Amino acid sequence: MKKIAKIIRVFFLIGLLLSLTSCGTNKLSNESTLKRVEESDSIVWGVKNDTRLFGLMDIKSGQVQGFDIDIAKALTKEILGDEGKATFVEVTSKTRIPLLKNGNIDAIIATMTITPERKEQVDFSDVYFEAGQSLLVKKGSAIHSIKDLKEGTTVLAVKGSTSVDNIKKAAPKAKILELENYAECFTALKSNQGDVMTTDNAILMGMASESTDYTLVGGNFTNEPYGIAVNKNQEPFLNKINAALKTLHQNGTYDKIYNKWFGDVAN
Ligand code: GLU
Image (tube, rainbow, N blue to C red; front, side, top):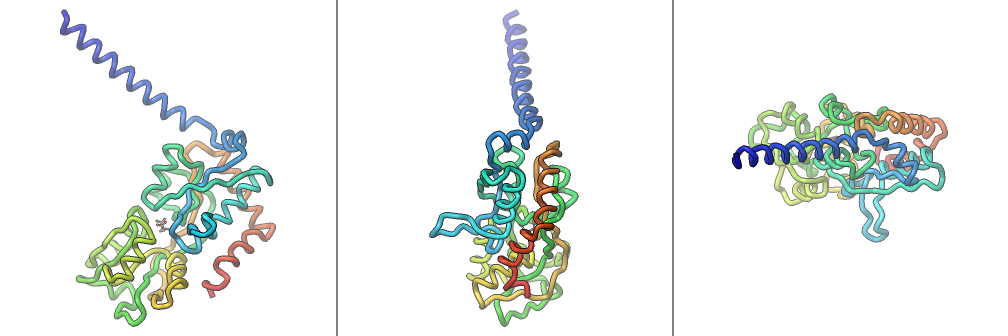
């Protein structure tokens, strides 16, 4: 009898635990992000902190700066008004979706390509930036294009990025070394841990502008359209983001921000 009572108790506890955890998840996914950001008068954006031109921490000011940051600030003002506050939380390519899904951030604006696989987990805004994957090498390197990545070539890329999947397809014989973030990846290239680094052209341009010994080669071999990601079932928030993006294009703010960051490097 005692044994049966014990078994019943264990089942009861498991049931209780399961219902508690599912309550937790439902609560998060049912909660309206738009309502929350309007009530708090702030939007928490997941951004890169180590990617020059898009999101880079400036040690002196303690502020993160870049194209994604300025677009996020402008979107926040459009959605919440002049009093609205943009708050920034650091993400990497690997951590951005988990941080969004567990409610640490309201949206991701972090050099993130819209892909069908990612669309299964999050929803994306309209495209706000067009990039393409390319290669960065030390000047004088024997690598001039994707065709030169052969057996024995070590390619550096960042975990959780589309760059890893794309390069595996484009250069199946090469060895891929995956680093945690873009700062580590560029450091690895500079210390000869790899022959070439690969990611989006615009990110590589930021590195080439920082160190003139490095250059992009071979042009783009993929299309990487960037989108802002929000959690699933948050259409009202997503619609606000898309409407705000449209306004930034119409009133010249987008072009102003674009020229501020890419006016020099893109030409
Ligand atoms: N745009 C690519 C991606 O979303 C590479 C840049 C990044 O790692 O954020 O994966």
